[in-house]
Amino acid sequence: MPTLDEMRDRMLLTADHHAQIGAWIARARTPEGDMAVPPSLWRKLELAGVLLNIDGDLPQPPALTTL
Figure (spheres, rainbow, N blue to C red):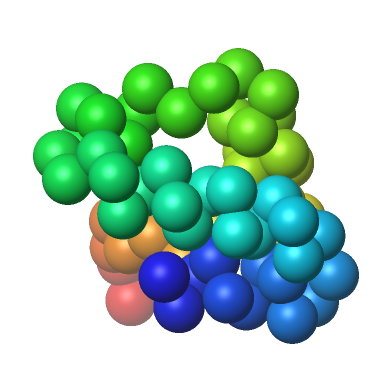
């Protein structure tokens, strides 16, 4: 939920979208259920994730360089 809250705080999701996605996640209770979010909400969430650069926070493998 912190990432979802950040998306709302940065105005990448509307308060309504935030509430709908949060309610979906609360009801889903499983990762598979989370992934079954309706397509219209999924698109909003996906775009907000891109704008928030979620993938940029993933650990990157070390560069294979010689010193």
